[in-house]
Image (tube, rainbow over all chains, first blue to last red; front, side, top):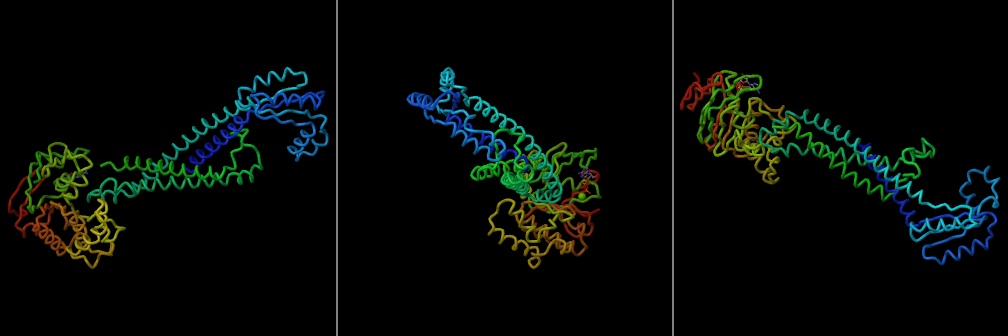
Length: 269
Length: 225
Ligand SMILES: Nc1ncnc2c1ncn2[C@@H]1O[C@H](COP(=O)(O)OP(=O)(O)O)[C@@H](O)[C@H]1O
Ligand SMILES: [Mg+2]
């Protein structure tokens, strides 16, 4: 049950993360225009001004060769051997353009690639498409994991509660013989099942919280194989709390329901 | 008040415990059901509280068709028709007080009422000073009195007693029978299955004799033989 709820939480967190990243891409549709070396700064800034005037363009920023080197250095601090060979000259200057809507990216990209000063245009439509795919995959895969693990836990609770009902068989029989209603006999078992669910949810939340540390310890920052591209951890505190809350309800409900099924099965007559 | 109409009970495996039994019990009666071991006495009583369902025939209690009663009414039936057993059927992990109280809790009686009713009942059966003992700390006679108190808290119209003296010494047995007579005088119909000859012969009550699942004798004022 703990594992099942962990899976539910993990994949919910993953889906949430993907959607967040997706949203940021959608909100800030971006394309990057790389210029050939022969393009002068003046030419680029000229183009920038003319683009700025257009409705499709929301934001535009110029990244000079020097700025590009700076960024490159920042991104590759841990690889000094690379930095030695890279100078501002090798890196292209670029414009980063946010369009007001994703749909405008393509027309602008086409237009700019016709410009003879432009080396290439990269835009994030593909990234978005991929993210959508990952998000969907996470959802489907997560759902399947969750369903199979939850099924196992429901069966486990059925068996455990079934066993304790059998263990209390005599007591139950006596209670019923002197006129105790079915619910009076049932509810301690239902309570027992719900407790399993609540405890599992707490454990799963703890696991989710501790996972980044555990991972760090064992994997030293290796990427998740299951969900490439976006890291799920650490799960934001508020999200963790919400997941905990939701899974507590889910766990209690499922636990109670499985016990109810068990009492139904074992308390006949 | 209670009617068995050609009731036949066949257990899985084929034992015919009762064969076309037709019997009535009137309100306020004290009846003995006698017969050798295996005759069908326990089966008869259990049909009345719907622990068993007849294979054929019908069981009636007042206006209720017991043998067809929907499951959700069974707990209520068992409060109107209380039953005590040869082995007492007390819950070993509960104290005397709790053994009587839990059945009231089970039907959601208010705590205050339980606190008053349980000691009152235990006093009636003479156990007011043993409320906090546990079943294993009681004599057999005392244990049977706890089970009587447990049945009586619901003020049942009928009290069934299945060999209530079977595990008791003669003196303890007599105390239980006197208690049952007392309860009968307060208006509760009592049906007691027994093969205690002394008790049956000393009291002038109705005696129903069952042998091999058939009622062979039924005397308003009877004796064991
Ligand atoms: N639950 C049961 N399953 C199968 N056979 C039973 C069951 N209860 C009683 N019997 C059989 O039915 C017959 C009558 O039993 P019972 O009513 O207990 O007799 P008594 O109480 O008069 O000793 C016996 O032959 C007994 O073996
Ligand atoms: Mg018997």
